Length: 420
Image (cartoon, rainbow, N blue to C red; front, top):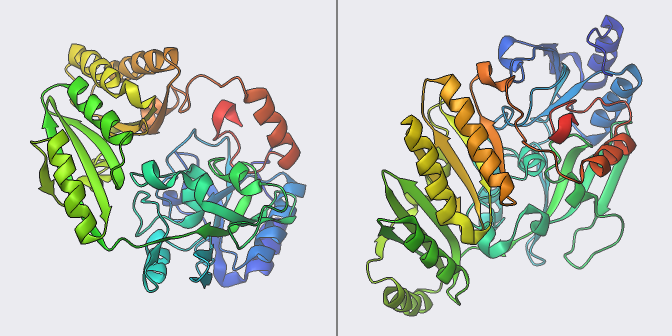
């Protein structure tokens, strides 16, 4: 178990590793879901990260990796948070092999800065994570955050081809390579993606890239019922359209299907003509519709939940949410991708009702093979509900993996599924 009382000698040693100008006492705003930290350190490279983790592992000191802190409120509260390990100094784009459509970047680089570097050669990381101007590559990988582009280009596990990871004992491990066809070594990058920093700290990642589109057109179709919207989403999802985004937005008893088409101007003209045959009421709009996910978080007092279901269950999920929230007169908004991953916002000041609604929706989702994960919730309710819901059947295996990688239990203790 991580020690809550590190010695002054240990902090001095870490200060010697990173330099005195890059270590400080933690402030109240450095706390993690109400758990106060003691020290914040900013290493400059993988070697410094390794030296810090090796020492903390020996001493049993809890370490909380931090990038842009945009998703630090996700997951369960840590059991303790002695050291915040900030990755802000590891912020370089190491290599952009534009002829190979790959790039290597440090974990502390913001997504926006990375995309701007790639755009200079007409390329992109085909992923639209939340808050790209602040969110970092490492945080995006740790939380497996992906957006509307996922329906065309796949999830992060499909885009990452190599990584450098510092394990809790201070070992620096490398997996994959810098070219798409390289399959040598263990596939650690996929294991680390979505592990909430509980197994190791990613310091570098190599991604496969895609060209920027020559032209983009966006359309919205509005329905009065969820079933009709779901049917259109499925029809588009299974079609030959050059879509790179299909999402459902539910608000004020109206259901909108947004579709983004990318390609050449001439090719898109033909695609639009076909779209108008399938959905005559489609109206051309702009990219603002894809900011719907971020807007759900704008009110920091609202509850935001992540729902994962089958694409064919979108209408069912809307009806379930409407029925459950309607009983308690709780306003709600829902943005879901055609792949079945969505975000639900609940707005109410009644914490007792809110807890019951979350538990009711979660139980229904899990009974159908889906899941509900709490992302944003008031501090008063955090201790009353597990962020992750029912533990999966794979939990014993996950615990063994955690034990193998982090036997001292120092990385993000308690934050992941099943209290890992």
